[in-house]
Length: 151
Image (cartoon, rainbow, N blue to C red):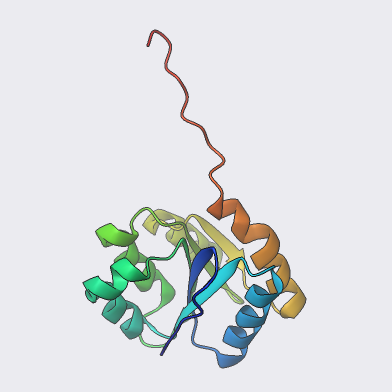
């Protein structure tokens, strides 16, 4: 299932299968001053379909991707791997999150290409803080190119 909200500044692709978590994320995105459009894909098959639909991919390329580590069928690490292999999504910041995880999950996420691994927000207030405070970090360029000596 794919859901779009269109008129905002940044698009966030959320890969999440839990309807209550999706609802919390939608409410949190709405609370952040209309900064985020939330696109929701509910499983790995939907992500693969989205990646294979060149026209939709170009039209709706997100600014950031959030993946639940614990997805049905194909887990979040496999989804992360597919997103990092795809040329279109290779440079997009990807955040992996989960309620339950091991140190091995965190390390593997970074090895595959996650930009960050975070504990899954547990309630509306935590989701709001995540959307309003943590996501902007990945959306705003903070690094400047360093001029090389002798150039």
